[in-house]
Length: 132
Image 1: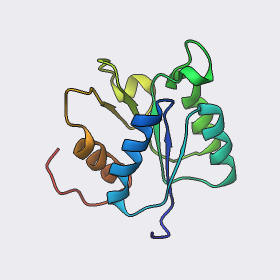
Image 2 (image 1 turned 90 degrees about the vertical axis):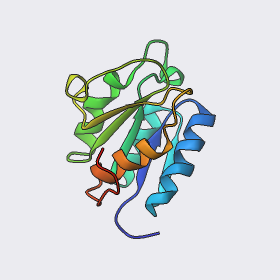
Image 3 (image 1 turned 180 degrees about the vertical axis):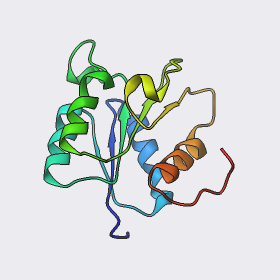
Image 4 (image 1 turned 45 degrees about the vertical axis):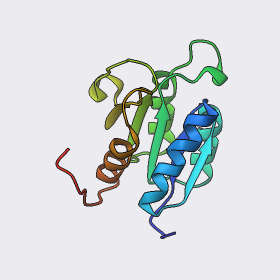
């Protein structure tokens, strides 16, 4: 893996989190993962990531907790680090409404592996292979 910083994946769904990490391996970066926003913030304090991939619904952090609860804390703990919010629901949120760089719906009926990789590449400042 290269020395350009790691990708932090925060998602309370174990299966989805592991699949995201598998897809993101294509970027040849170290990947760290956690199931809670609280633990993700702790990880950021220890070592600053190059990118945060943050699940929108974070049920393991408490009933009703969403990315909206954690985005201000990630901004404070990791200033300048891009945040990509993902959701396995049918939500179609605008990144600017959330205060993040990008949003991706990872609905199970739509292939989302390549869009995840391409959005991460873009946010990391890497050259993309598609025009999306």
